[in-house]
Image (tube, rainbow, N blue to C red; front, top):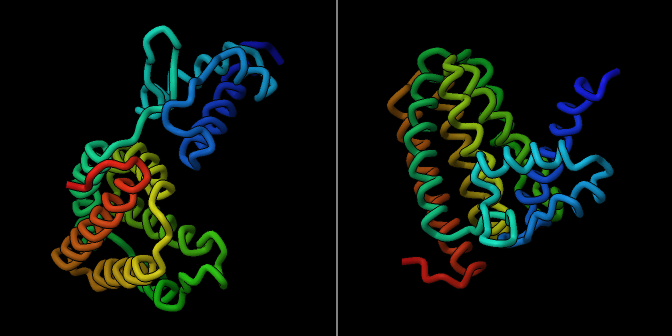
Length: 225
């Protein structure tokens, strides 16, 4: 196997590892991304790490810092609002298309799962099962919408969303309300009601933004307004 063939796989591994660390806040905003140190830690040469860092810059997860190379991108309230502004436009349209084009049985089953799911930290530490179910609903909506350009546009938005979610505290009341909102979206799509699916998505994102702004404001010590 040639170095040329192996390099893309190493670059992808480096990209995924660093992206996940940024999303999980293991690499906090402002952390310097030193190429040499990262290569040593990841056990690979500097070339794939350099390629991975270029992708992170393109994603908006890393930024140039004068005289210090690259650092993890900051998170502020303007960024949170910008992400949700784009998310609102894309996800409400995706839900509308899914209601028109999707398999009702798929979304009825997801609605049933959401009705039965728990958001209790005792029953689901870290809320792993709940977020996995939400990710499956997102994937089902993307597939049902049947527009690869729309799905591609949503992918980086959801990466930033995952990072925002990590900054927000787990609020049991908000998680329980979000589960109901997701169930309403799935049920509307299952019923083929495009207007209701879009409206339910709009309402869910409105509440999610309010929660995210309040919690990110605490994390970054910015005023929410």
